[in-house]
Length: 534
Image (cartoon, rainbow, N blue to C red; front, side, top):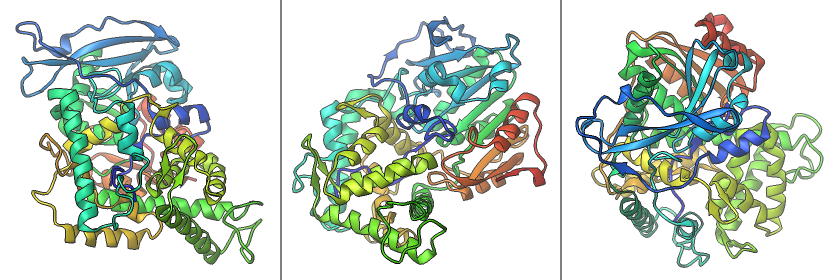
């Protein structure tokens, strides 16, 4: 196992748009990778006495696709609004009806996905036509991401080495025993080196990209557009932003839709353990579907095809995937471009198509190719997931993802290797095929160069208007239990259930679309017996 892989929570890139939900493949390609560009942190000294950030008037200019874009300032540190400041990039699509009832802010998740270019280029794939008619829709690049003041750590060659390895299995720690002291220490060292590079290239911004700072930025943006209350559509990690906003500014929370909910009270190890159950379940659903099709690479004599397979056939299919991962762990595959395919990269390639059912046939091709010791398809899928195109990382998603999570989640004062191994064993018990690839999450941030802010706690949103929490029963990235937990924590949370597979629900179900649109347009909240869509 390549020790350089970032261990722990899988990027819960948004969907409803982002790992996209519905039937728009071009949007999935955009959103799985995110949007925006890789850049360096930009920090400026404010004008003397400038602290009223909500009084800014953006200088909107045409930026293509009918959108208007602008940059606004935010304080680097909200505890010191008179100190240094950063920039945030916004993109606005005006309401098509010409008489907006307000602004709808959209966040696509990650953490690390930039939203301005998505709203600029693909707004019709993000919200329904009726919502577009009545709302100005704004996407922004949260602090640390995209074309806002951004986290920057490594050049493309450095990211390749960190994410995929050097191509030398010995140097990459591929032969170290998984979970051994040497393996853990090697992972800590690799991530410490990465963190040091982030600190050197990003500077003081690295300590201020936590989600609570983004929540305060969002409150500032609400003030800038002049809305009395925030209207918001957040996917995946974007639900953490929305939940913390409702908890911090309940009196200013308007119509908030949180689709593909995260549990704001769960720590990184709880989230990873629960998420891997979702991924394992989604992989089983794929195997069951594969076995109904001719030419399934997981079929064998005696396995039922052409109809619903029995659980034993699915178990055998899962075992074949486990054997393929184990074979690549033992014998990595050299790709034509010189990169080495390790099992960690194969895992990334496996999970990428799980977010949308229409992508499941890509897994057939992946399994066939890797079984024949060909790495090209695996790297194509992993590169798409990591926003790597032609050897170039198009966004800073990977860097921002780590930087934001390392601030948001508390860290133990010291690492207990034995406790970590016990936790890893339990995770692998819950998810025998994929569990090991989401273990030892504390390794990533153990030596992060800036202290954690720790935004993880239960939320109440006391006094907030009703909030819509949308959960999908077969969601691989944000398990349904997280939506149940969030709705239960919020005093005014209303749980809407989509019975199905894939990551998030808005945009893929007419029933869900109707509920969400009615809520955003009129504030209608479904009755309990009408809040379930199949």
